[in-house]
Length: 459
Picture 1 (cartoon, rainbow, N blue to C red):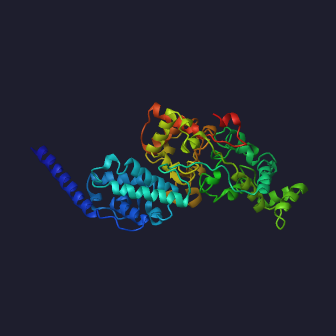
Picture 2 (picture 1 turned 90 degrees about the vertical axis):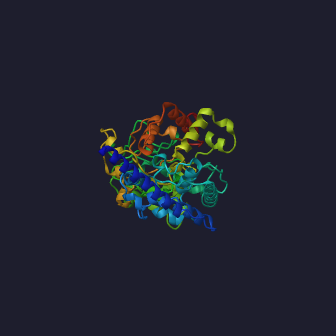
Picture 3 (picture 1 turned 60 degrees about the vertical axis):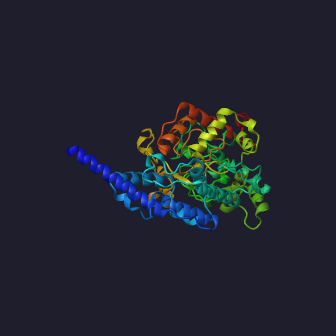
């Protein structure tokens, strides 16, 4: 009898709680204002309680304090904050990032919010048809105005252009400096040493992290330099705002190119009269300086784009470029929200995401890989605790050619990388068939460049 009373008490409490939530949700639901698209989207997010989980500063609903239900919501909030925070993004719906655009597009297209585990808790939420239509119009408007004029509607990723506007004289000198080992202290390391253009723009597949001067190894895997011009920032932790600032870093790094200053580097390079003359021809008032050296290297790197991969040609309308397995892989790539972060022309490089949303990546990583300062990710640059273990999302173009993977080079193959992303970012285990399909799609991303080994780019 006592057990029955307890059971009935629990049932009554749950019924009352659900009824209270239902009334609360009904009162929250209002008509969408007749305003600009961005204001309508903001209203939709508020009315669907998106801020509850995706904003650390928002007021939480009263039922967060309920037993059982409250615990579930707290778990949901922790995961939601790992995916994206609206604290800064929502005030900028007029100029959203490509990632925010893609994430809202994914939620509307695939009806992924609220996630199924918490449908009862978030009763009454989820975008209806009117809200989906508004969000999709907003997506197309912002994507076309802010990022790509000639967008492919319904696609979170876009094709690479066939060329960039550059200064040919600076490009030629930049290519020379990119391959010049005199930029290192002992004349053994150039930019090309760790970013090997013929093989994919990254390091040797045998090197988990890059080898610098005197046989020293750095703490991170060298990212590809191909298509880096499309990244919002450079380096895994975003400490360089652009290609020129990135080019200034390694030469003054004791592990990479030696314990030296740029003043010492410039003085050494100026011993070459012919090189000085080449810089004077382009920069008659400044000549060879740190700024001009890094500027020409950056100008050369702008040309390192790889258009016309099979996937790009497929997006442009030639459906024969991809087979059934590859197109199925692309659909899985989108359906599993991979394209929400691997977005834009480079299929990545637009945001810094948490590595380990559903499981502690560093606690379960191969023990032979020792934790170092570079594992702090974005926090190592910003100093903010909330940026711990957030890394720049790598671009996926030519990804078949740039093994090993992740910032630490811990994943030897694309199959390993896909399984790890499912585990740590989605909290699931994929089937072997799904892994094969996604990897098949990724192999369609090898583009064309005069610097790429033709046999590799044709894979």
